[in-house]
Length: 332
Image (cartoon, rainbow, N blue to C red; front, top):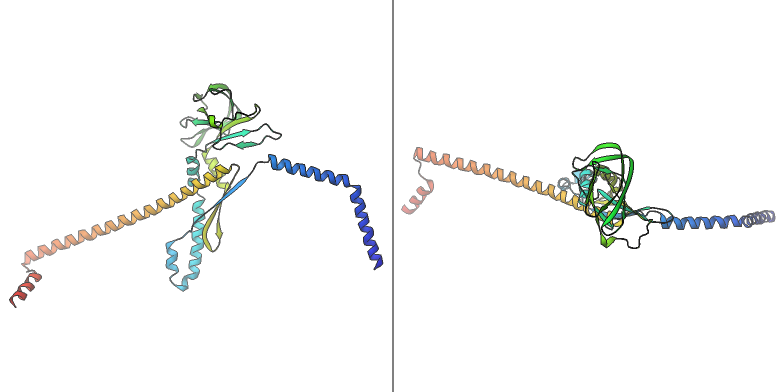
């Protein structure tokens, strides 16, 4: 026992000696990792996630299956099928595209601050300028247009791209690809600038004009292809059931701008609810039209039967039984 305890003490002494010997290395590593963590937290792009719940997802057919204990298993299968259908309906390309269009997200505004590490930050609803795009004209997508505000009335715009795609917003298609485009011009706010590759105007937003901005800070905007932007948002949108036993669906959406992703999720849910309401209204109108058509057919049939009965009576001189019964009653 003494030998084992002595060997353990010797081993601990050996480890402690190594730690003391490499103490500066360990201290340096700790300081380096702390500095790296501080820099990462300060300069890394923030990623936000918002959640929303929608439901319950129901189907009236499930209530019919639940009327008999023999169909409990089918009821569970029907409930799972309803949830799957609800998830498939929520991951709808047209609804995401409609939400993007309603928010005018085909243009993105960004800034890069004059810091140690330049990181693009989106300026959602806080841009010092806004772009009025002419959708009847082709526009270069995914090209960075830098805007330098010279005064309250003038600005300089710079862009340089070697393989630029020209996009038609009305036809929703790429008209030309791999086009070289270089822009460097000075213009006035609220004036249209155009050539055969683009046409738009820039308006100054004085409420968001960065008075204390450094000359090295960059402000720029980019045009987006609507289909590509919709596919990107679909990838960021996660739809999953709350649990296998509840008909409630959870929506999750991630992005770098908190206000933007909150507004998008609200618009998207509004689009889903409006579509469901439109479907219910369509079903209600179809049901009312069907009932009206049936009532009209029954009414026509009754009128036709009444006409045939009247003609039969007049042709065969049949006395009205109600009148005959009344006469017998009075003579009794």
